[in-house]
Image (cartoon, rainbow, N blue to C red):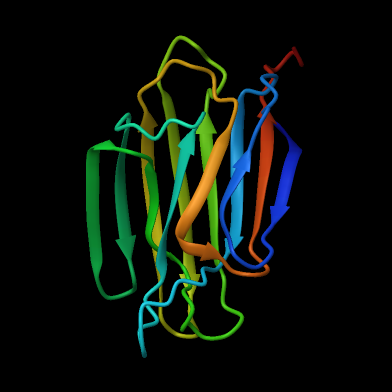
Length: 180
């Protein structure tokens, strides 16, 4: 397996969405890595992290489904949706405006067989946030009910990405034992 950087974006103040376009169709899988924070303000004293989402090829219709498992060290919860307008990658993954200073969430999102036009696309993600003693861990699986090859990906959160958020896109190539 080999990984190749495709694109990277670092948020300036106030960017609400990161889009990767013209994705090469030469890899087996894709991986997105998010190191992020949101500027969303839930109100006085509320430090609950915000959600992270993605969509493919500009499709905002109800063609997505996802399953989500979250834990914070004392409580576990799960959720799912069958006809969503995007893949919900976390319920509490990015620190919000009132979170402790300089805390960021981290996520790794795998998009399997993204260029295969014979099947629906599947994602899996793992990530979490530590807020100096509190935080959460999220595991997610998602599905885009389209056989189209993925040529663009939008990643977004509640509110805007805070200054310093970085989102990287990688291509993954897998070869067999003979090197082919």
